[in-house]
Image (cartoon, rainbow, N blue to C red):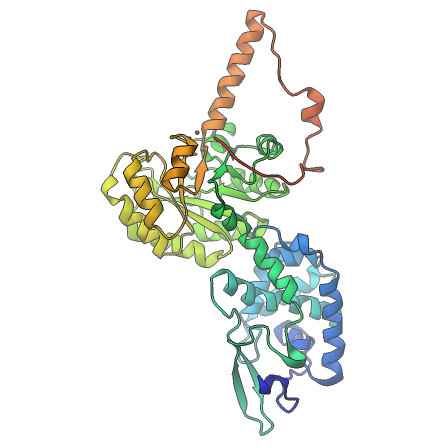
Amino acid sequence: MEILENPGYTVPVQPPARDGVRWLRGRVPRFAEGPVHARRRALAERMLGALDAAALRRPGAPVANLAEALGLPRSAAADVALVASCYQPHQCVTAAADEAVARLVAAAGGRWDEETAVRLGLLVQAHDAVRAAMAGREPPVPTTRRIAPDGSEVVVDLAARPFGAGRHACPARAQAGALVDGARLFRRMHDGPEPLVLPNAWDVASAMALVRAGFAAVGTTSLGVAAAHGLPDAAGRTRSETRELASRLVALPVPITVDIEYGLGADPAELASELAVLGVAGINVEDGRPGGLAPAAEQAHLVRAVKDAAPELFVNARVDTYWRHEAREETRRRADRYVGAGADGVFVPGLRDSALIGALARDLPVPLNLLSQLPLRQLRDLGVRRVSTGSLLFRAALKATAETAESVRAGDSVTGLPTYDEVAARTLDEPPGPLAGIETENPR
């Protein structure tokens, strides 16, 4: 680390420019030295010091969380990614990245000044580092570059000092940790002494009821979302409805995971990226198709594309061999293949075979998720780490609705329900406070 602490070895100082990526390079502390660097670094440290660590620890895309904390829209994360691909001086600048800088400046208030540049620089530098950390690469930034006294360029290995050293050491260690903690929160919920019981909601009211009941995370049910809108399930026709629901559920104080079928009629990787930016913590992506099971190789490619597009998402790969009653002998092979492609969990709805459940839970290197079709205690003892209710709650609500109406028609009294005022008071303006979680029965 002598090079990083030696003032004779300087960063590749960037000259000023009028706009685009070169303007950004020329205005950030990362590519400056001397008093200019000290001034810009102090500005960055003031910005970082004003951030709320709790806001950074939200699930979903870490860069979107940081953008929001810095006063930019969460959607700025997409432009940050474009700029990050060209940010280093040895990288070629593209017209798309220059245009992205212009949009980011506009989103930050429209001033092409040093303060704006420093703000955007924090986002860009967070992008690659946090995504690398989420993908398990250590150190997240493997090398940095310095100009030696003789003018030659030196590549410095950061394996021993992942946050650097000396005057250019990363000032955002605590903030980076908070961002990664938030993105990993939902994963950690699968590692507790009891299985994560994940109830599935179909609208804001049902999700809020589950949060108030003490569940630590909430999923969506594709059947419930589709049926509530008068649309067929598993037909790729509910992308807008699912995205709209997700955009509202992320205001709740628990991680949200979304059932996206096999893409809801969209590119699954693109949809996954959109949901991560919204603040979604995870997704289910299934290998069932209207005509049968997708080829395992094709589905593995889809899982890999989704994981590459949104490494912060918990990608739960659904194996539909038991749900569709076909190719059950492929269950283990498909699960292994999806895990090899990057899946964070495996979901086998319809599976009730205790021997296979135990083998999968024991041998898979990721959490096994099942529907609540067997008693929770039995699933726990078999090693299942996540238990979903699927469409059960939605179907139970339909039954209760019809039965309550029949009671009114029969002249019977209906008691034990929430009052009008209690339900009316439950809005996303004042979402329920933090919680704990546990207990439940059936995909979608």
